[in-house]
Length: 151
Image (cartoon, one colour):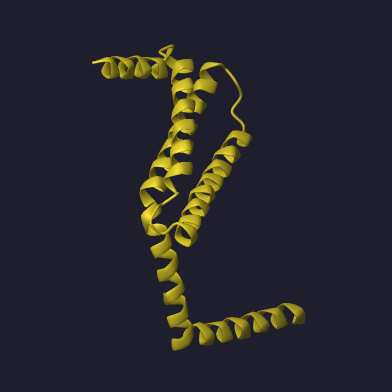
């Protein structure tokens, strides 16, 4: 019982000291500056990140529907892959943007991985839609584009 009381006291003292540190004007200013820097870094990336996130979620949805159609078992592995994809895709876009900020300030490289990621996710969605409906949406889109180009 004495150990439990001692742990509670240590926790209270630690929280009190941490609150004193972060209530100081210095740390409030430092955290505000860091938050502003992170937000200014991420602000130009939001369209890429939102589109990527939407396409990955659409792929998750269509993938689950396609797996059910094929009577496959749905496991947590697929959901884990979705989280990994979102994390890695976000990292790739942020790293490319960081390279632009440092080495090519007049040209944003973030669109390169974002474009490649979106093409891969759209292709995956089209494959899942074909598996569900039997309609090859990717082929239909390509045919429409060919007709538009010929005109």
